[in-house]
Length: 251
Image 1 (tube, rainbow, N blue to C red):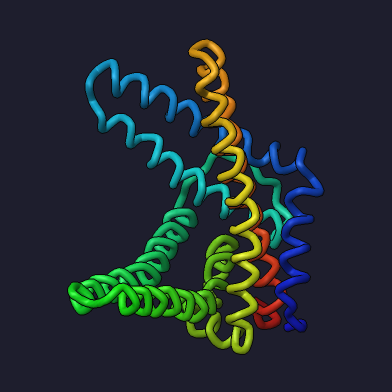
Image 2: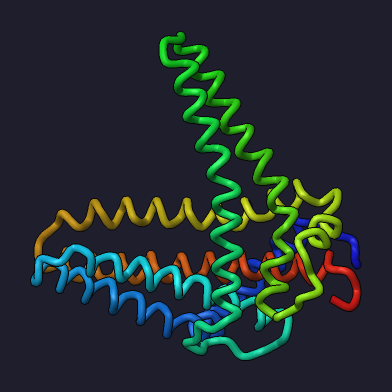
């Protein structure tokens, strides 16, 4: 196990994705096209047939694409395999199950705390409400730091390494929980800021005219989906490189 520096791992993750844009598109374009096709066709037929449930097809495809691409990208880094196949098998199902458990473990306690806090501060002053809000936010971040110590299980699942357990991940990330948390934030926040700014600009331009707005809306969808796929590649790179650094020798 080598010395771990989240800043260096984050820089390497950005380099892994954005220094080879062609490689990224070769790996991601099939999932991007599939998602856009389901999104556009699902929305069209939902309105045509008056079946709103068809619109949810794009959400399902997005989950499938995100998980499959994350697994594919981590295998690319750790096993030097060639990404880009449309596949969702047993490994992807296990990865999805772990992801759902992780999200529930992160959000459910925070949600329950917020409900309890709302009841307690129902008739309180604004300063008390602000204090409780700060406590909830701090609780969320503290919980995230603890839970991120289990993230080695994700790349291990992607490469079918059954020797890596939650306990081993916890032990391997000892003293690195805050670093892993900061590294993940450095992956998520910049791209989300760019997406938000450009979406705002696109929304403003959409008001310029019906004909132009239609094509601009398509371009916006393509950009947003591609940007989020890049974010998945970035996070997957960070997880894989963190795994390579912190996992015990032989795993």
